[in-house]
Length: 230
Image (cartoon, rainbow, N blue to C red; front, side, top):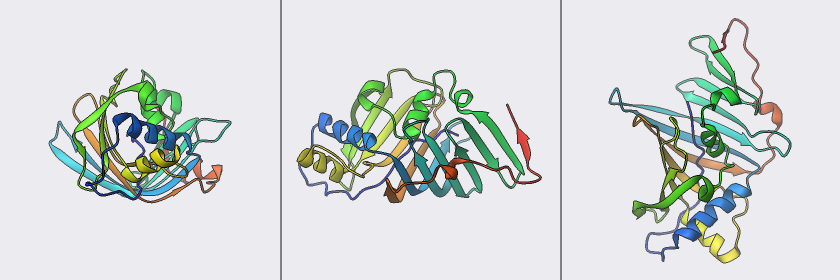
């Protein structure tokens, strides 16, 4: 499963004067640049094109970008019950109901040109470098937040297209101050893969740059759990 990190902030009203595309992208990139760690709740909806059905999930996420190693992440799903954990080198996919955990290297998980998916999962991407960016068909949503359409310059099986909803409040702060401090300015994302599957993630109760311990991103295999290595 490949996820794209999305975090919330307070929106302005739709009646406010629209910013330029350049300003929205600038606020987005400044928000990513200031990220050290994030802790948030999330809800997820995945539409499976081949089956014509939708799966829902929710839980808690932790992300960190330490100075001396690759970015780390942890998704603790409440529904369905599962965990996805990475210490920057390894990734564990734990399914407690099946008593199984799949273990692989980060490099193997994102081989074949899929590193851009990891980049946006951990908030390290550069929008203007990696994507062709435009406004979505509806430039702003009902809350006044900006909606972007991003086409990767190097499409991959897991990321063919990306839509981001960017906080209007963060954009206004960027225009006033030239920075977006202690804020992740994305309200929601929709990831489309090469076969038409799509995953939307919304975040709430966002806490940024609070100093998450590195031990949060290590996984200890429980007793009696089968370890699977692809």
